[in-house]
Image (cartoon, rainbow, N blue to C red; front, side):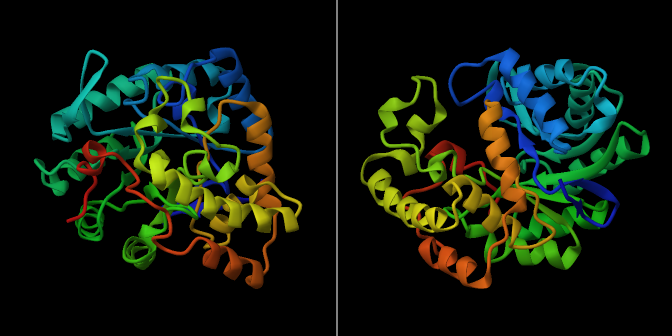
Length: 328
């Protein structure tokens, strides 16, 4: 698989990464054997960027990756995230105090079974802690060799600028896809001005853009999407129309809707590295093939018109999770 560079500090990764959250958290039951097989197959396909976080599980996703990468650590780029206050197995708000940043880093290193983290993200901006203090602590970890590159997630342009002034930020991770294009207005122009790479999570719309979701009731009882506003009631029905438009274009290209959604993202710029998540090797291989799909300007325009900015119906998170997004 071709590679791309995130930021200007030298971080090189595969054009598509692998989001590992769903292997342990949020999307139904876990299957460790298959998840490890997915990670190993991803490496065989040339996918080098693996994305996790202490909050996924919590903790169990990092542990899973640590087990999967025994003997393979030097073949991947590990990205993990901090920023939540976690008591036992419950997230209780945000915590990006410098002392907590250092504690989380050491704990993540242990769970991952490595002595360095390639890309260390702040998972959510903590309004109670100046970003300068948090990034200052992150920069110390770089100086100590525990972390190689720094990232932010769901940060506003103002926060991004303030953080980047303390220490170079290599990547911003935020939601971006054909059904969530809010980043295009201010966030993408900001990171491009500063030379920061962009890592879209949920690039297939939490599975909606696969075209295979017909009823919310088909999800497992513990599947996060049961509480997602875009999967509820009339929002769900309206969003199916958006997916149908993408499916039509995918059929013309002899591709799946997922592949077209990923290919569209990859064509938005060489500084973009989507991280589709999956728990199955078949879907991993399907996603990886999207990196080879070429889309003409005409098809790209049709896709943008089929799923314009603001076309998706409903908020992208429930009220509690929306309140944790940095919009300052």
